[in-house]
Image (cartoon, rainbow, N blue to C red; front, side, top):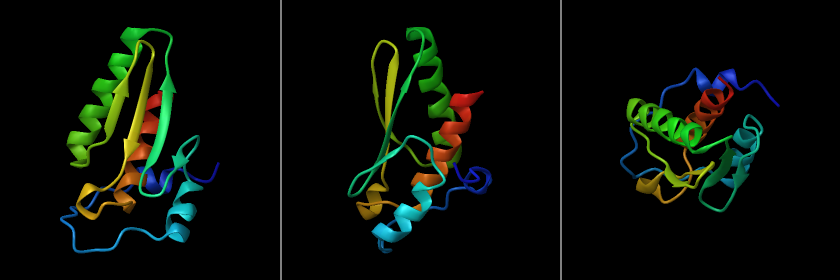
Length: 112
């Protein structure tokens, strides 16, 4: 895995639209800094697995805190011991660097 610290040290920038989404080439380059995420046309996704429901919910709350802090919010699907996280920048109906910054920070959260 490439140096993930580059993305985790960045902060999300407000995006209110009016800018194009990342190109496939730009998104693929940023994907190299993530571990286990899937790239779709206009979003990135990863499923995190836990030992039990409590750990899954603790992770969801940590992601909510991080998302609030960055002011960039994912779609999450929660099961008993799993949480699927999907990021896209809704204002541009595609991917921005913010999606990758938050994904990298969530990976870091998962490891601690």
